[in-house]
Length: 224
Ligand code: ADP
Ligand code: ADP
Image 1 (cartoon, helix red, strand yellow):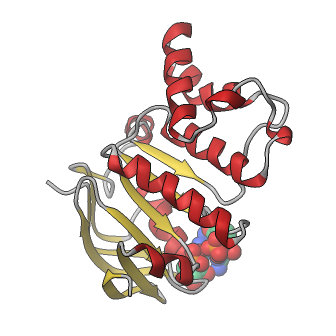
Image 2 (cartoon, helix red, strand yellow):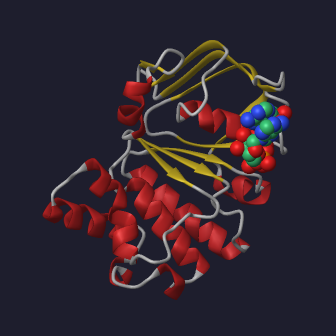
Image 3 (cartoon, rainbow, N blue to C red):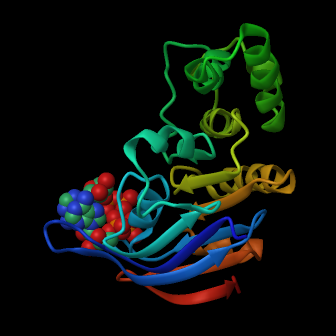
């Protein structure tokens, strides 16, 4: 089955704004894709639906076979364990070390100390920051901070990695570096979906690109 299945998904907010309009597309396990569109196109709505922060108001949305249209509140923590999220402003805790920032999701899952250390160092290795574990976010460059955010998002080995404008604050060279990190993670089997405005960067990467306009899918294909 597909990793993600949008079947005529509509999202209308209580104030009457339409976030998405009968959106249909599939994402296979292991795919790497971008979602783009102007402000207000529906990118954040799409991500929030996948995280079950919002419910579709029509249609059906399946994630790894689970129907998010009818998911119960009690099931949401289990859904979230399958997903990692990277934010534009990485949301690191500046009073904790790099290690503690990345380890946090595993502590919340209640794993043992040794397992936490093993997986945290593995995640830091994936973003080439294993030698920065004991430092604090303020000691790192912007690009390194964003890599810590990625390590934290993948430390629990999610099947799906979502990113919302992950290169929004970075210069083009750093942005390209961060994209390589996402590609490395994808190569290990994680499905990666990135919402981004950065068309120049997307065009260089030759992955699948979904283009939204006012809540509708207007293009789906390899970025040109
Ligand atoms: P994007 O992330 O592409 O900028 P959004 O998903 O934020 O697009 O917005 C899509 C549409 O849904 C816009 O018209 C926006 O105003 C509306 N919208 C988004 N979030 C909300 C909300 N919480 N309440 C009401 N309308 C919203
Ligand atoms: P982005 O450009 O990342 O989509 P937005 O400025 O569109 O950011 O939205 C920021 C936040 O404001 C989102 O969490 C969204 O839910 C909320 N939002 C967006 N549009 C509306 C709206 N029309 N009414 C209420 N909340 C909104």
